Image (cartoon, rainbow, N blue to C red; front, side, top):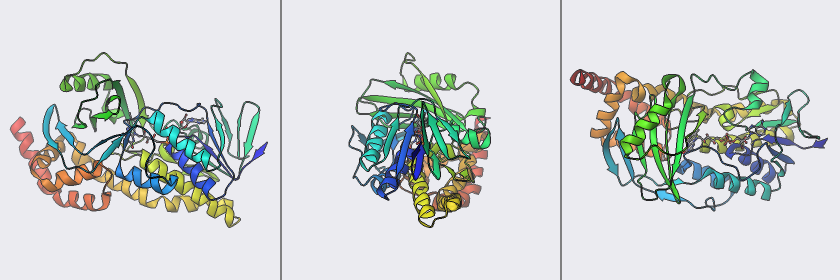
Length: 383
Ligand SMILES: Cc1cc2nc3c(=O)[nH]c(=O)nc-3n(C[C@H](O)[C@H](O)[C@H](O)COP(=O)(O)OP(=O)(O)OC[C@H]3O[C@@H](n4cnc5c(N)ncnc54)[C@H](O)[C@@H]3O)c2cc1C
């Protein structure tokens, strides 16, 4: 039995941020992952301004030291049509998760986290506060489950991680082209979108949307590739992402959930790396506070309170999501995007992680009557 102050299960952005924060605060922290690193993770690898800010705060470095494609222009399309090529967007960084997650883990280990990656399947005993694998048993007063969208920790606590009908599902391919633009295509999937994210050595193309609304996501990807004029000859990979639903109480007892395991993905943009890192940091800070006070039983309350701003942002995003994605209303969004410089600027800043939902939600609700009117008119013209 090895004793720690904190065990972190999962070494993605949430887990490495938790381990880095705990180690920097002087806690004895173990980071455990079933996979050996470097390991891949299906993702667009879009690293927004929000991600960069959190990265700098948590990992204490200016930017991940890995190959990165930085673009400040974006092509925006809707339903097979290009609406515009905008050249003044805040920069979006794009990188491969294989390299990003390896960089995050290496930094956390450099701060002193104990490395238990590549250990295969793990067993969590929430009551005993232990995690075991092979013939090893680790014990700690607090455990952070940062084990992703299929979180075994959430399953151990609540029976299931998420209802797969209401969360999102996405498909992606990797292609070798290096000269393609950064591109977002609204409506490439129902209640979601398509993306073309250039990387230093190729391009990631994907479609994603609420799973229950997209019974044939492969057909959506094929249609999107056709719109992009690209062949349909590359292996496809798919994964769920919990955009649209999050756990109001992110854990139970002394077990906390962070990142995807807690459902912290933006339901409009699908951005999850930033909130994963932030929630990992907050979980470690809550652990340090509760242990320092000699009251580990308060850790979940402290953590839940600290997550309020993220929960508020996700609720605000959920409130305006129907204005963009509900079939009856989406024409109004597209028409508004064409005409309104402000709507366009707000959306592009949101996508780049340069603004929060508060002002956008207020503006969207104020514009809702005009939006509904535009939708009515567009639907009537199409009929
Ligand atoms: C197709 C797709 C595209 C996306 N594009 C973007 C994007 O461009 N930008 C963005 O910001 N977000 C994007 N996201 C969301 C983003 O990938 C996630 O929100 C983010 O990876 C969450 O980080 P995490 O640390 O919570 O979980 P993960 O990154 O999933 O890491 C979880 C870790 O836990 C480990 N693990 C799992 N089970 C166990 C276990 N039982 N024991 C030990 N370890 C375990 C796994 O091996 C893994 O290393 C995308 C998601 C998808 C599916």
